[in-house]
Image 1 (cartoon, helix red, strand yellow):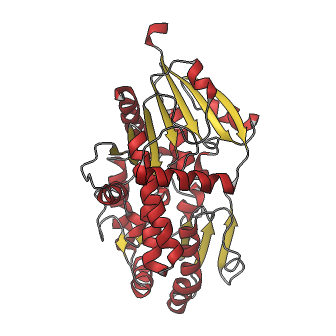
Image 2 (image 1 turned 120 degrees about the vertical axis):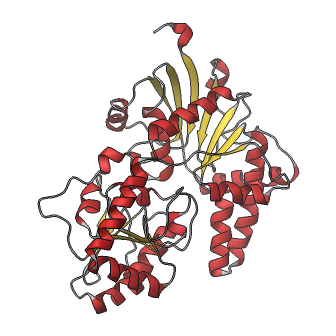
Image 3 (image 1 turned 180 degrees about the horizontal axis):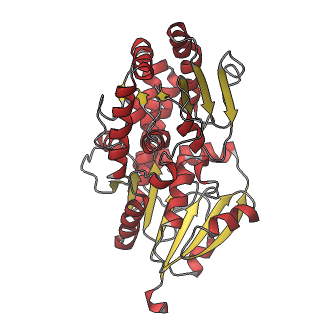
Length: 395
């Protein structure tokens, strides 16, 4: 390839993006790297963590362009983190300085077309002069606003205000700020005096359709097996898992005695582990078999923001879904009773789960329609191609 065709980018990431499913942020960063144009030359600066050669080698096997990793090996500090949040929130209220956070001296030694950074709470300094695409992923102001509406705690209200100013600061210093859902982008816009802010864009999540495509298992789907999946370092997933295991599932068991519940993900809540007919697996490297062997997916999320990877994966695998409205936010064109069943109360979740498990025709319709919606959309390749087009147009 001619050197004149090579385009240099810098990626500022807080953690190494592998394994890909560690979080929504790591998933997006992983896809940015493996779907990057072949003429891209990417320097990836990792803020936290030491080099793991096995992870780096595994990731390199999936990448088609030139990538160099630099490990800054900073130590995580809650004091520094909250100091960064408070300083940037104050700047969002009274100013717009870019020179806050950890500096990367090497950025001044090289020439880059543009920079990509994630997540929203990044502790990197943007005082280097390059145009920046900041992938916020989710809106933390929206997350805390929703939490405040639920628990009415002053702490959640204060966090909502702080993160609102924080997001305003980021919009002042980044060339573009992307969110994965229109709902989050609109929420942030509505918090700004300039509601038409052109710095905000939507860059949705995708799903690996082929990887999750249902191919069948020797034993087929377990007839009354209920699945929920998530990263339980994230409080909304903890709340949903407890709600499902302690309130929803016992009422389902009253009507379907053979029902079982499987909770997949790292650090599940200890108070639900060991409950009768409830299996908590902990971290699972490959979750496909759980999607393929379950009969329904219940997503009783009441809190949170952004788009949920688990819903897209369940749809791609043809697993019928019962979800709250919060659970399916950010998924374009998804419709109640066509692609999933929307249920927002305890009674509705229980009744809907029983109906779908007892009605094979309804389950089949939801499965086929969800797969059809996924097949026509949510291509990671198309999403990342668009993200690099944005990077190339920044100034």
